[in-house]
Length: 217
Length: 224
Image (cartoon, rainbow over all chains, first blue to last red; front, side):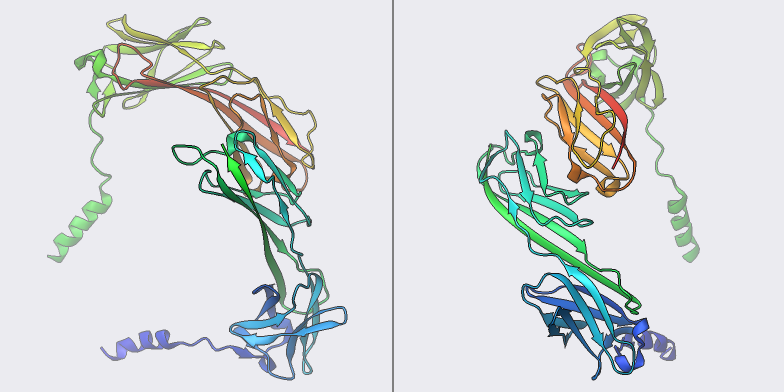
C-alpha cells in the first residue's frame, strides 16, 4: 500500500531545474523579449530542459549603436534598464566557449492618441493616433460611466478611426455626461531577420496610450 | 449493490431525457388562448414566414385550424409544421405587406396585415480597395426600425465584424483600419433591418407578436 504511493510522491516532488549555460549550446537556446517595467526590457532564455542561467563569462546585454546595457539575472530571465530607448536594438549573448549572437529587434516608440475634448454621442467621433507601424495590431476601447463600453480589434494600424452615433450608446436609464477614457493599444512583433544562430527569437511589445474627454448625450 | 449502482448510471447516461410534451391541439383552445409569435424575413424576392404557437407556455399543434400567409402578389399559402409548435412557409412576394390569418374550419378567425420594414438594396463601389474607406449605401429607414450590419471575411481581424449603423441613415463606411492587408478578399456582408409589432395579431392570444425583417446580403470582392 505504502509502496504504491511512491510514484505519486515522486511525481509530486519533481523539481524543474534550470540549465546552466555551459551545458547548453547557443543553437538550442530560445529567447523571448518584452518590455518589463517602464524603461526596462526582459529576456527569457530557454533551453531544451527549461530556463537557462548564464554562468560567467557568458553574459546577456542589450545594445544600440555604441551603447550597451548589461542584463542582470532575475526570476526566470534577465532584465536590463534601457530608459526610453526605442527603435532598432540588439539582444546580445556573449559567450567564449560557444557562439555569440547579436539578434536585432525593434522596440516601438510611445505614441499619443488624440480625441476631441468633448464628444456628443448623438454625433459620433473620430480619433487619431500616431507612430503607425506596418504589421502592428491595434485595438481600442472606450470606457466611462455614461456609455456602454466599446472595444474593437482593428486589422491595420492606420492611425485614424471613426465611430458613428449609433455605435456610441448611453448607459443607464438617464443619459448623462461623464469622462470617457479612450485607450489605444498597439501590439507589435519586433523581431528582425538576422543570421543569429539561436534556436528561436521572439520580441513582443504592447504599448498603450490613452486620452480622456467629456462625453455627453 | 454495485451492479444496481452501475445500472442506474447506465440508464442515466443512455437516457435522452424525458420525451417532449405532446403539443396541445389547437381545436381544443379558443383562438384568444393561442399566442402566435411570428417572424417574417424578406430578402426582397421572397418572405419566410415563421410562426411559433404556444398556450400558457405549452406548444400548440394546429388541428382543424391553419395559419395562412398571403400578399397582394402571392396566393395564400398555409404554414407547415417543421417541429412541434413551429410552422413556416416561404412566400414568393416582393410586397411590403404580408397578411397572416388564423383559420378555423376554413374561416378566417383572426387576421393582420404585417408591414415589413423599409425595403433596401446594398450599393457598394465596383472595385473597392481596402486601403481606403469602403462606403456602403442603402435606402434610409424610418423611426422604429433597427439596423445591424455583419461582415465575415478572412481579411477581418477575427474573421468577422459587427457594426451598428444609424437606423435612420442611408449608409455606413467600412474603414481601412478594419481590414488586414493582403491579397484579394471577399467580404460577405449582411444587413438586417428589423421592426417589432407587439400584440400584432388581433383575435389571437394577448402575448402574440411579430418581428419583421428585411435582410440583404452582398458578396463584395475587395482589392488590397
